[in-house]
Amino acid sequence: MPQVRIRDTQLFYRWDGPEKGPVLMLSHALGAHHGMWDANVPALARGLRVLRYDHRGHGSSGVTAGPYTIELLARDVLDLIDALALGTVSFCGLSMGGMVGMWLAANAGERIERLILANTSAHLASPDAMNARIAAVTRSGMAAVADTMVERWFTPRFRAEQPAAVARVREMLLASPAQGYIASCLAVRDMDQRALLAKIRAPVLVIGGLSDPATPPEHARALRDQIAGARLAELEAAHVSNIEAAAGFNQAVLAFLEETSDP
Image 1: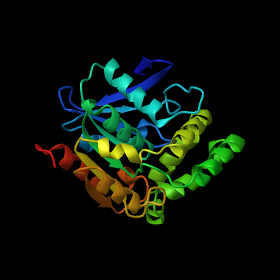
Image 2: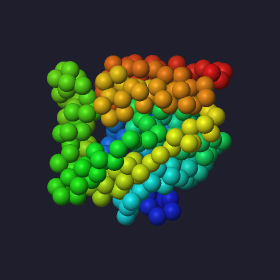
Image 3: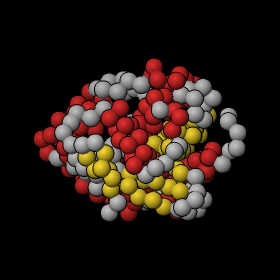
């Protein structure tokens, strides 16, 4: 199981695709792990060197005491890039992963070639929902929130038509370490990166889900409007568009990465 030591913990990572291909890092959502991208890797790794990893507090990475911050999670990425002797990468993050991507592109822009921000936001208006989630997991563990999260992550139609895919995600959520999940909830709850958006200079693709209740379409459109040169792809999906609309997601990402000139 490949891991690297970074400061105070270990990060799990995994490579897929040709060794000489351009590097694309995939950064997962809160409560998930690198397996969230299983539906995307076969298409993306045909020509790209795909690097997946688990955030601290998730999957096979170490769990450290909270609270976490988006900056902490982003600096973990920089440490991983350095440990693997990578110069620059393209970065695709969904939900919390996208929040990490914004910080990286604004504060370490020389390391980010192209950026995909999927189903994410620079700021969540109210802390109430996250506070309720933290309280529930503190009392009863991940089982207290897994079903509610699945309902928000996928549309009713997808849940009815693809029960096996939904069940795999539910099991992923149930297996997420409660301590790391709560620490990461605090990072998302307390984040406000709106002032950073004007500092992003990398080419940016924003992907939004038209039925996303967690980061609704207006969040994606705000990112498109506030990041210079950003473009937007909207998919028929809820929050985890990379799974629910995998073909459209892959097509949008590959088309964006294959461009030879800035937008």
